[in-house]
Image (tube, rainbow, N blue to C red):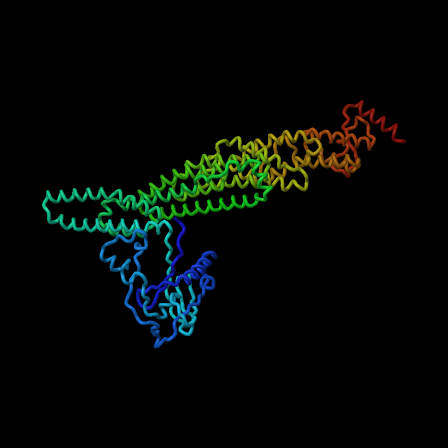
Length: 620
């Protein structure tokens, strides 16, 4: 149905209404240039849309005209296209017989060419035995404007036209269509005569005649229906137009116009259904023995290339059928009843055939195209969303469990969001089991946490990007994520500072506060200073670390409190201070200050004892 014969190119000759064909060789050459222009995207740049060809034209122009190269012969008629069919032409009306030549006519075997002029051979349709009888001229073809110009003679601009060739189905049905058109013409003539006679008949005779016409209409309907179905199937619009024109008012009586619309609708939807039909495959393809055989025979790469090509061809067919549906919908845009019918049938087909096809193949992008198509055609996309949401959820869970890169998870979630937006909804409205998907995403995100200083920025960015894509489920993500993080945090006794730094960086991205069970930034810095000071047992470092930790809530975290006590003990040992002395009180608030603490003495006895101690030890 879609493979056409070679296209024919025509050009405007001299004189009004004169149109000539390029020669077969030139048609092939021009068609090749035209396809090259199409392959480049139909550019409108003059240098890219214009092509040059060379054509031999006759010499001997006199006064701007061309001398005849052969004696003039009488006019000939074009051959009847139906006569070329095996069954021959069945059209008997005189006008058709007079307009076209048939077998047995004098001009059937060979059409006598007219007197050759420059315009007659501008398409390269005439050949000359002697090069001296002709000269080579250059023509410029503009495929955007569909014109040609003789560059050699600097002639005017002439129109060119491309006529699409018939498909094989159209060529095989020409004989049958000719018979039907002949039958329709005969019946239409009968109806016209009957309409004229009705005006001259009495009431009873008129009713009798009208009943006969009604029966004739009923008798015609099966044949007309078969004819229209076949014509729509082979996409031969010309014969349909001829049939409607021949029937005239009877076409409305038979309801041909509405019937044609229904047939065309069924045809394009059937093509769309076939485009999404299951492609037959060998069920053993996935078995390991066959896979090993393909590897041994070095056929795995060609097999994969074949599968890729088949997928591309299927995608092209689906795109073509989508374009046919869109073209039919646009053509009948003014018919509200037809548009409503189209949307109902197309929406049902997309829901029952196209979306299950995408789900079975696990292709989220195909599901997105189906939903977008439904929205573009004005169909209700709601029935498509459950299957699409389930597909996206399964793909996201699979990507997480197989520990694929987070980029793969992002892509799946983005497609899910696009599907929901096409239906003016959110992805989570389409998701069947939101809690399960969020839990899997949290687990995958938690595996991405890296506390190494070199990997930490990338890790934080990846987890934040995943959280950002969850939209309204971000809060649920935070709850589950921090629950898992809390358990891991408690287990980290040595690297808790780095873990806390990761959490701080993540919270800065989310604009949320740290969990209450986690150290803040100052406490993390105090922990770092205490660890560094204890590692070298430096008095100055210990004093600075203890003073800084004292200004934070070091008792909130067990590890920080333990390091604080250890640093105080180390400083006491270095300074040889008695066990009862409060070292933190002696340090003050600045590391440069001397270790000194003033205590208020209450009571006369305490003051007398201290004064006695001071007096006795003053000399030494």
